[in-house]
Image (cartoon, rainbow, N blue to C red):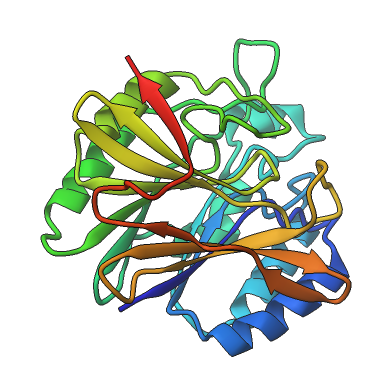
Length: 268
């Protein structure tokens, strides 16, 4: 049995103190087994923001898998963004990038963010296919574990997300994990929660996007996800901030054949 809390887009520098306080209180009641942190811990990639975000995460005594987001590069230092975009991130979170193995699950992360790209929107995601294959190989070595792939950018834009995304090599990567042992892709970036079955021919996986714990809201309240795989089914519950507390929404109950998820994407 495992309970995983998925968070993303905390954006220290524009963090939401009310949400962070309520989140800590809710976590104490849930007693999760691990955190999956899907990037954008900082707003401008400042060392002070990294320090504050690490201090906050260290206040939770449980295993954590942390991946970088596009905001976790030094926004105002163009040279560093090009030459060593994740040096600061690695200084503070490199030790939390290794896979987290739980009783019946494993969390494995890849970095889909870039400090600089030859396209107009540098904040968009890009999948390194070699990194993806390494993650798939790691998952393959852990028989009997439910595999969760963690990154910042959705491979395919969630259908109802307020922010549309175009992840480079996202469609190819989506097909690839549908054929792998990964059954879940946990992401952030769009600042809105969603649970979507992604179908590719006879294979499928679940794409789960987390909301934000920052003040940078996009028509949805601050939120986080609880992923409970204590039984035969996987239950994903979104917790929305209402006033000073997080309130669970209607759970998404996912059977092993994914027949009970509400939203689906078919890939040709």
